[in-house]
Length: 380
Length: 142
Image (cartoon, rainbow over all chains, first blue to last red; front, side, top):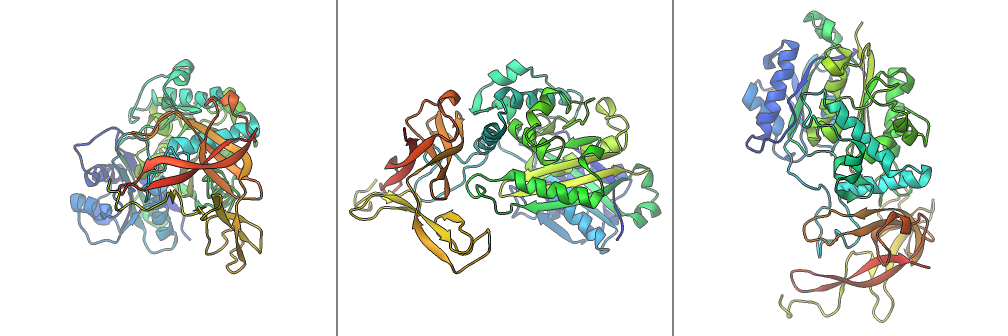
């Protein structure tokens, strides 16, 4: 089976673009990724499109209707917040299987503002009656589960947000470039204890794309010098665990996914130079430190206290600013994380470059549940 | 709000809340006879051991312990805050989420593993036909 390479990738600056359409946002990133590879849509053999909120609307085809209709197969993917990563993985798998040599993967989302979750119900609405089903609530309950197990504090969770906002000061594509000191984070409006407003990801519009190629094709096109190797691609759903049906268990599916990805890549967490992980809420990042093996079980709070996950630290996490400050356009997020890691491996990340990065990991989770991990390696 | 279309008595807020005539309300669950897993509500198959034919319908207990929670300050428009959204492990099995009432909404007042009891009362909300509903809540047991 051929190795699979990212030969072109880019993302638009995340923001709020209510006047634009989803296909238009996706088309922009698709063209940017094609330009980055020096290729055109006529060379693509298939397209994989991730979009969640308009998943019934053949967004992939509509993107092609804007950038070039060649009759290639289009697969539209929806998989909660793992949507973009799932689309990328479908492209990876098709090349692995030897069906195609060159494919385009796009993730795109246009978001409203405010709380996500809750859901429809018959009879009477149960939000605030039978507890709460919003996203901030779920990730706060999970954060409190971590507190009950390991004594993790509100301040430790808040430090994650301080870090990721600081990181985004060096990322022109992030929604915000604004420093948020600890007291500002902790004194921001409490949304759901222990997550304040600055500890919740930003709802933004955005898109990101990647062109994937087989080794043969990448060499034939002379694209190996900037290519990034996909060392592993893993996707899991939630296995049975005691509380999962009531309190969605994002930890176990991430751990399973990490184990599979590390095994496929033939490396361990100690070999990583940078990580982009799913910080949809500040509480989640601490849990994923442990889920991804960046520290021992229960040491997530200590890891942020030590500053190990800052740019320049032992294992930089979310140097892009993460979902907390770069923003979280659901269907685009998975590919945006892959773009960020790829950019560092190519040595093209400018002022936020993680020096000498040769291997990195991009992780997302989606409610429902899904976990996806890609491990990427610089081609030497 | 037509009186004519509303049913006579209150309806259960969720299908697994049972309101037996002349008896006390309770929550209904399912126990897998093969592996012992306890679920809230009915099941077609066991997601732990995949068994399909050894289910027993059980009455979930009205006592349990607080597993985790959050204090919700921002919810959807019209929902009164703050309130405590709690995940409770029921004695004898089953995990449910609901509002924890009759506590100070403050982390210092809400210890993990606090014993709670399940209480049933009017939901305080009516549907479009004017039906009233009975809901379940948690409150400190001590």
